[in-house]
Length: 314
Ligand code: SF4
Image (cartoon, rainbow, N blue to C red; front, top):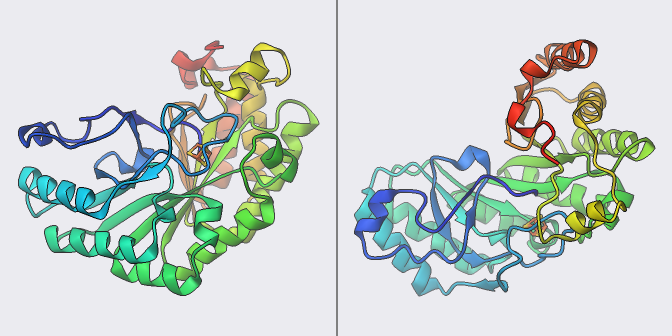
């Protein structure tokens, strides 16, 4: 996943400041849809931490926090937030790597502390997910882990290899299918522009649409490739070894993606701050409307509709 909206240490609830410490380590990242969740840091960093475009956890070495530490945080959050908390997000990059037994304990502590809890979410990496059996995933779902965010990025093996995603497309697909089978919610995150310009862009869009059609996630989260300082991709862009799409090329790619997604009842969330043209809708119901919006901008070169702060940002 590209940098999601992030929060530094004491982001979520300023009321947590009342209770001594929330013990966040480093910047805390979360998906846009988790803006109203209590962020419970269960691991520090990402177990993979090699994607060329990602700078989220480059400043820290991956480790799991201990169960007593995590339970201590839950108790502090209960004091600060009360029992009526509705949503929790487990950080950092892929809390699914935690042993199933420990995750079940965390989920049990959460449901004891917050009886009104209706969603616990987490990022999931492909390998961390595949390391769990379907039965384990189902146990986690039953215990309350109901929402997952999988950084699919692309359905194109060449792209996945080039960005060092740590999984080939068949593994990514299987990870997504396992999550769906477990009954958890799945948002698949994809990155426009990750295949570079020209034919690479088209191949990336087509393969990504195919992956989404096979995986059948509940939602896709669309982001745009932005070179983040101190990442390998940033250096490639500086050296001219990776060609970023311009705003209109990015929209052309998004159009190809939408045109080739054929599954029903798929939520589209393209409101991430990295995107040139914020979009939201549901396939197939809103397909033509979304494509018309793109065409309108492409035809009229109408920049008024686009995210002005992001035009010419490179
Ligand atoms: S899997 Fe890749 S994109 Fe996701 S947090 Fe880790 S390094 Fe970043």
